Image (cartoon, rainbow, N blue to C red; front, side, top):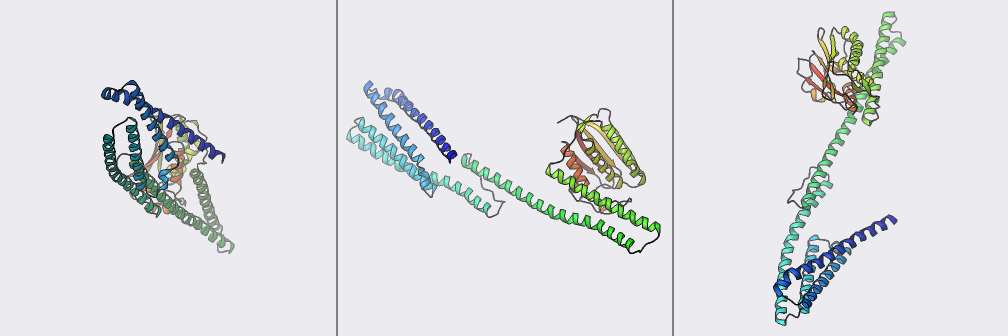
Length: 427
C-alpha cells in the first residue's frame, strides 16, 4: 500500500512538472504572438499590448488547467468506444477554442457585428473539424480493431495469426510488436511440442535399451541356474555375455546421467592450458587395440603451432574416444582412421576422418540427436558392443560447453569426417 502511494505521489509530481512547463510555454507563445504578430499588424499601444498578452496568457492557461483536470479524471476511460471518446475530446477542444476566442474578442471591445460574424465562422470551423475528427478517429479505431481481432484469434489458439502493419506510427509499432509476440509464441509452442515428443521418444528408447540387456542377462542367469549348461567353456561364454550386457547398461546409465547434467547446465569443466598433441597421442594409444582388433589402421598428428589449448582434458578425451570409436566401428578391415589437429585462428581444430561406408544423407542432419541411430548402428559391432545413440549428443554438449562447435561431413561410400573446434585461450 505504501509503495502504491509512493508511486501515485511520483505520478502527480511528474504531472505537476509537465503542467508547469506547459503553462510556461503558453505564456511564451502568447508573448511571441503579441511581439511578432500583433505589434506589426495592429500596432497597439503599450497598454493594449499588455492587455492582449494578459488575455491570451490567462485564457490559454485556463484551457491547459481544464485539460489537465480532465486528463487526471480519466475522461477518455469513461467511454466504451475510443471513437466516441475522440469525438467528445474534439468537441471539447472546439468548445475551448470558441470560448477563448469569444471571451478575448469581447474583452478587446470588438463591435457586435464583427463578434457575431466571428462566432458564425467559429461554429462552422468547429463543425468542419468535428467531421474531420470523426473520420480520423474511425481510421485509428479500425487499425486498433485489427490488432484486437488478431489478439482474439491468438487467444483461441491460432498461433499463426498475424496482423497487417499500416503506417509508421505507434499503432504500426503496436502491430509489429503483436506479430513478433505471435511469432515467438508459435516458436515456443513448436519447441514445447518437440520437447514433449522427445520426452516420449526418450522413455520409449530408454525402455528398449534397458529391456534388451536385462532380458539377455535373465536368460543367461536362468540357463546357469537351471543347469542347462554344465561345460566350463559354455559357462564362461555365458558369463562373458552377462558381463558385456552389464557394461552396456553401465554405459547407458552413465551417458544418461552426463546428458542430464549437460541439459541442466550443471557440467563442471576443469579447464587449463593443455597440450592437445599429448592428449591425441594418449588417446590413440588407448584406441589402438580396438583398431587392431578390427583390422583398421589408426594414425594421427597435431600441427606444431596447435598447442596449447584451454580445455578440460578428461572431457575432451571422452569426445575423442567417442568419435574415434565410432570411426573404427564403421571402417571395414584394411581401412584407415585419421586424426589431425591444427590451428584455426583463435581456435584449434580437430578432424576425425574414416574410410568407411559414410553416413547416409538422410541420417546426416540427425546424427547429433540423442538416441538417433542409423540402421547399421542398431546392430552390435564385432566386439559385441551395442550403440545407444547418446555418444554424439554428449560429444556435442561437451564441445559446446567449451565454447567450440562440432560438425559432420560425409559422402556415402567415401567415409565420414567429424570436425570440432576448441579454444586456445581462456574465453
